[in-house]
Length: 317
Image: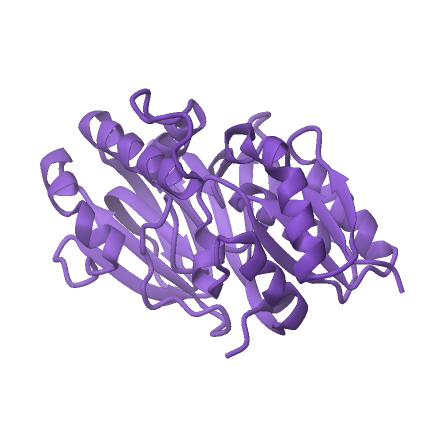
């Protein structure tokens, strides 16, 4: 039987993973056991490495990085006919998917879950969107796909964290402050968008939203509990829409968004659906879509749930 494969994104956490890898590898070996490391050198390579490992019969493929790395490894596993399980070794900026399944940020604790945890079948999402060449493209996602403010926030985060933050600040603090700072800047400048949204076979409706999330998991945006009721095994997305609140109300209610206490707000909508389609009202308007912390393209797009499609190593209940 082949050793578990660890797919490492050395550029995750703003490049800190590259420096931290010797320490991460040592703790992983101590608390988990033997493994084969493989390193990505460019965006998207994690998909190819994970698919190749799955085809070879590797039973556990571990993503070492942030949400983007986890998503790439999941995409690689889901792209082939395999019973490989996804493992998570956190070392990134956001860490939103690991929060939903309860993976701790400390390497030693995460390694013990990889060794002793249970393998669960969870739902995955599939999005078909319009890529930057104007063609339809599909990919899988584990956490949240969204459009509106969130795409602008992600773009700002990728530009770098707050200038005033010390370079030696902990990764969890750097990530959370990067997302919070980006949200403040975006809320002050971004206007609401007008979209046409259809849930399953219901009539399509015109909506004006600051943001709309199609959530398989609970968190996005560096720890924002956007879908507090989301379950990974119910065969449904939680669709959360935030109406045209305006910058002042968005900023005033930011704590409620992070704590997951926003669903009772009049301007927030919530529904369950297994399939969603969305497009801009103005067909020539560009509305970018965010998927697991990446921006692969734009609307129009469709979102479909894939029930119990992926095995994931999780903490024992």
